[in-house]
Length: 460
Image (cartoon, rainbow, N blue to C red; front, side, top):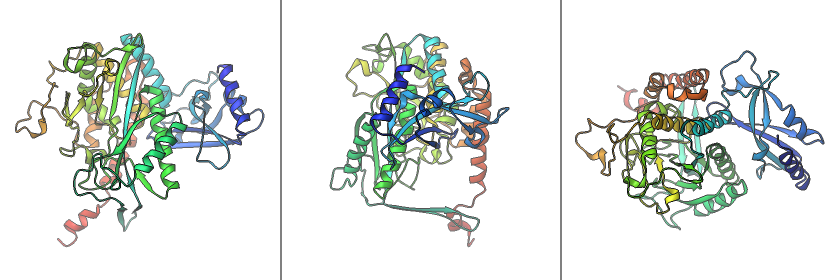
């Protein structure tokens, strides 16, 4: 660890009279975990050199010879945590094995993201990838849900009820504009820059916050941080938020659209004036790779059973493996409104926030790299471009679609995963463990009676 960074963090401990150092990381499915350590004079150096031991199997990782692992803070992620009563300095932590060499754990999402970024540079000679996520979520004033042997229910109470599309609704009907203002200021304290926020389409309190572009690892960290900040802020306001892809019947779903582009020599590597969408051959091949591997990608970009209640035709759901400049039913959209050549990009619309962001972004990057290396031309492969609403067409035999459920997504992953293992970015152990966890979710939900089944069949 660079000594100036150690000294910087030591200064933060002293200047802010820090009492607690907090190490955070997510488990394989994306849940956030943390461990807190009271400050003492040798703590920082001890954390950097020795770390903190924990049981990795409890985080859902596949078992290795010894499930004991070590968390070591990434000092570059230091931030004051406003949600702790005691002055707390928070870090994201990297996961290492307990061998003599302190080998990075291959299933650690942050380590995997760094391997994906390195593969990008080696494979196609660009500097970096830049990502801009859109966070869609609902705000409810009260929530109840439970699942037991003899009972299963959910109930949400919402302060808003529009009777038409609520996109960009204005106050006073937009009840939570102040919430978004305050949340944006809060995210700035975490080092996350908000591009804009607004009311989304959903008529019962759906919101959107979009953030500026950062690198892959930083973006994945920021996704975790944004969810952490919004969950905590809502709790302070006695409100409830959810990023669930489809929390309500007949209401718009929550996506996490991801805008992205590559840079070379500090310049946008996708731009070519006059081409379709001003996207050059490199960009088209990258798009081709993502669409080609779209079904397998779904296992990481849309990894919940609830994801596929959103990914159905209607509600602007991006279900078609196509691309275009104005078709929101397509998986990939090239924004028409971009006027700055350095922001030429595309938007991958299927992902949602149930994804593990490190795995999701890395898988997308590897799919694009595969498209570039194998020159997958999306035009020749029939992926577009389409600017019309293809969902309204009567004949769609020439168009491929995303999986209809999580089981189909896992089947697609089983048939198409070699692109993920390029450069050992994804290990076979991680893929197998991921499939095992998701199959367990499918079985659990598949055997649980649904309340609507009582309505259909109880008196039949």
